[in-house]
Image 1 (cartoon, rainbow, N blue to C red):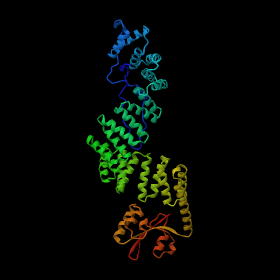
Image 2: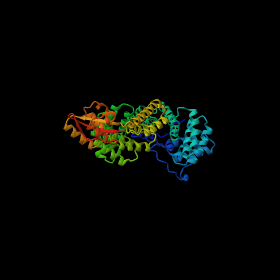
Image 3: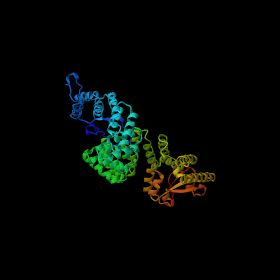
Image 4: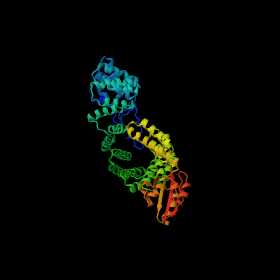
Length: 505
């Protein structure tokens, strides 16, 4: 078969999807399969009276077609058919030209005749399938291509066409297998590697996706988005230093919020927080309305211990994206570290409401409720987790039992008149003044205990367990008796030291 008939498109390039959050669905049109080669101008149909009579149309028609004289070729080839020469060499050029000029009914007619006269020729099935596809007869096109594939498992056009159909039918594994077969035929063009990168990423095969993208980048000039996607894939594949390298190249190519933000994220991934903050701040300064950079800056600030600034950026992010469950979850973690437990619980509850399948949020929800002594609510959350997380049944059963024991012990202690207390012991007036200021600003009691207390329970956040105030000496006894749950006492001086208590559930 003359290779002139093999006019498959080679420009089906697809951009690799981005990874923020999670990869977007592949948007692939089946109709992309029949794109025609660039640079070929559709022939203008001339008045047939202007075309001279052709003495040997069966010889002249294919020659005119190969010379791209399509109008004259069509007349000659039709004349050859009229003489009874119904061969695939005459029919296939007519199919190709009909598809090119969007005369799809004519193309399917010639295509049907081509597979009748050449039932062992995969090229006939390929072009008939393309004509059917352009006529929106998708299932029939698929049927013809599958017949062609039975004749030749190496036909590039059929492999590509069936792969794109598989993607449109949400069968990425099948599509990947077909494209791999196409690659084994020596097709290693950027569009193919990008498409395979998309499919591998959609299956969570990050290293495989990165390898395909890098092959595509090796054969054409990489774009800024290529570098950013390669960086994200590198992080997901566990090669975090490679992510930094790609983002550095992106900054050189196009300094700006996209490349700065990506480099900040890459530095965060390798735990170079100071460098991460430099670039994430640049990204936020240059693109203040971009939620992604704002969110990542908040997280980096949180890890870096700059909790006040982190709080500002968490709130700014949620103002931009109020329905983001991860944003509410991370902000809840931030608030819990600050000891703002009620606010933290509200944020985590919001995350669970927005995404009920977010198991990490449910776990933290139960932990906060347990921390607050809301035993029955905590128990209900853990029981719910146990119903949906079969992989961790043993651990969840143990957690359920621990909460029940804590609940029973708490009820028993309360019945005996005991209080659950945190205790802070401070050695100087200067430290007392500092701690008092921090408490008024909302800093968590347990955090201040760890930093400043000299008491024996400092390593446990000051937790001295259940205490009966009646067993305490004055003036501590009176101070403790006046405490409500979650209330902090005023400082009490005794023995040259300053004592502060907090009652917890």
